[in-house]
Structure formats: structure tokens, C-alpha cells
Length: 169
Length: 102
Image 1 (cartoon, each protein chain N blue to C red):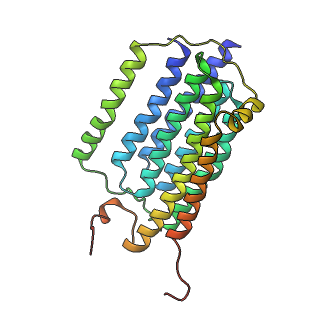
Image 2 (cartoon, rainbow over the protein chains, first blue to last red):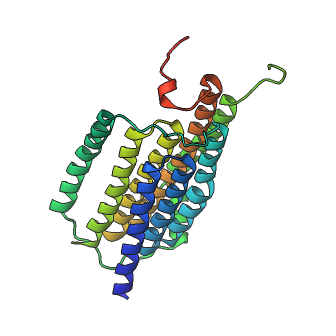
Image 3 (cartoon, one colour):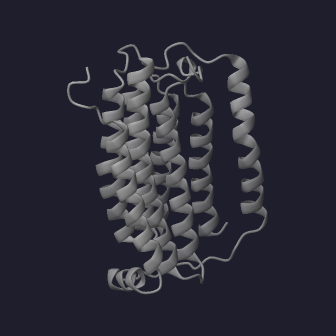
């Protein structure tokens, strides 16, 4: 069974790596979105490996179900060009500076992760949805209420921003 | 190498891909896609750290749920902003949106 877990981890890592490279390098935004969805499915597989099936389900429901559809709407509403929005490639200077900006935090964080390893439990324990619900309505009640307020405000703000008065045009 | 280190490296990979995409993309939607990649890396790192150490697993999972909720709210608002910008400037490329006031 341990071998199976290792194989699954490698497969999900490859899916995440391939999807994320596709998502940042593709010249067509719709293809980049497909890369993003591949990555999201890979991360949900990682959640399954960590014995958190509820998080995997929420990942599929919220990200793959809702956020990717929102991004697809954004692509359609901005009249994406057929030849790809990222057609002419960036100048070399932007590329080098972007790579440096990526490598600086990656180097520091990678060095910390590799040199100060934390002892980890071999088999993670699955906690039930009941406990999560008890946590939401008990200890973490305030953030639970605040996130609903934030979602309400975001929804109202989005409607207000794109509002057009009738007969204005 | 412990299991937690492997998961953290995968999360770091997602962060790098997102950061690099954020600097390279020239359209607002492409930048939104990169930000979602980074938020996913953060969620994966949180859940891995909570599940594989003695830390409270409930807090880790609920924290990631809140990250997901914030990501959904953020995507909604960014979509609205992109639509407004596209309507006003005629495109959603960052190079076209450099004027402050006409």
C-alpha cells in the first residue's frame, strides 16, 4: 500500500507540474485555463492522499466548479483575441527580471524547507466532517461569519461595478 | 526526506509557477489565473502541515476552507473589475491601461 501511495504522489506531482507550466506559458488564455483546471484536479488528488476527502471535494466544487467558470466568463467578456492574447513574446529584460523575482523567494523558502525539516507523521489521521462542523460553529465561529459577510460584499460589489442604468446608452 | 517536505516542495512549485506567470502575463485574466495557482499552493501547504504534524488538523482544514472562500470572493471582484476595465479601455491588456486620467 505504501508503494501505491508513492506512485500516486508522483502521478499527482507530474499532473500539477505539467498543468501549472501549461497555465503560465500557453499563449491562448482558454488553454491556460485548461492548464489551471488540470492543476486544480491534481491538488485535489493531493488532498485525498493527505486523508482529507472533504477538502478534495471542496476543491473540486469551489475551484473546478465555480472559480474556473468565473475565469472562463472573464475570458469571454473581454473579447479574447483568436490568435492568443499573449501573442508577441515579452522582451528579454522582463523575462530575466521575472525569473529573478521568482527565484529569490523560491530559493529562501526551499532552503528553509530542506535544511530545517520537521518530523512528520507517517500516516495522517482522518478527522470527520462532524468535527469540522463543530469547529465552524464553536471555536471558529467569528471567521465563519466574517467569510459570509465578505462573500456577500464581494457579490454586491461585483453587481454594483458592472451595473448599467437602463436607457443610458 | 520526510513526507511533509515533499508536500511543501510541491506547494513551493505552485508558488513559483504563479509568481513567474504574474510577472510574465500581459493580460489581466492571465494574471488572475496565476494568482489562483499561488492560492492553491498556499492551501496545499496548510493542509499538509496540519495533517502531517501534531498540530490541530481541524484548524488547518478550516483555514484552507477560508482560503478557498476568499479566493472565490476575490475571483468575483476581479471579474467585475476586468469587465469594467474592458468596457472603458476596449481591452484587458496591462499595456493599454497605463493612463491615470484622460
